[in-house]
Image 1 (cartoon, rainbow over the protein chains, first blue to last red):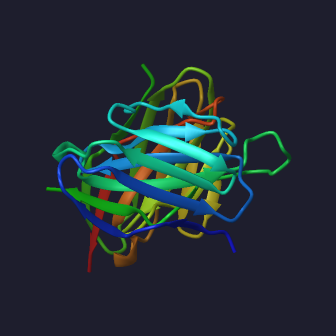
Image 2 (cartoon, rainbow over the protein chains, first blue to last red):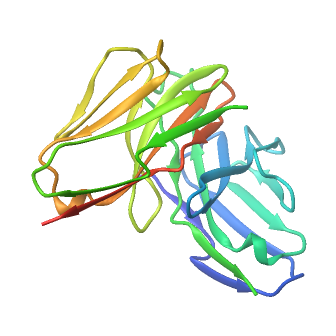
Length: 117
Length: 110
């Protein structure tokens, strides 16, 4: 069964703290993504990764960095958390299209609700 | 700038009604359009559309894509309270990036 897990469902951090959000997938997917979701703004892409050690900026990378040292794990890092980073963070993974997978989809994790106080 | 716009933002109906949700897009290097249903958890995938004019169906839900006019619709017939959710439309480009709309919040009352 397809599975994307995120290290925490809820997290409360203080302003200025360094925050690590971990995402692990067990489907051998090449692609992994970090989104944040805010009311009225939909899902917004922060970073994505095509493969190990590869990363690309999404629409809102400022204040975030990522790490992909292993294929199954994609970490989102907030170097110095700020209150405007309070949000729901969603990780997703997928196969790249063109590998005969048919209709593929992004599989999402359950989300991490981060509150920065 | 790539964008995906959904309408209406919010919809309130009674059980048994039929609803149509709209998604228009402006995305360079379009590859596919996806619909998701989001409740109090991560979005669940509904449909992926790549070709114009071919309707996809799953039970009471159906969707179609118009690549000339750059839009898609999601239809739900005979709505039920369990259909209450936010419906997300996303367009994927050929770099595997997904551009999401803000969603349509559907509320179905008994």
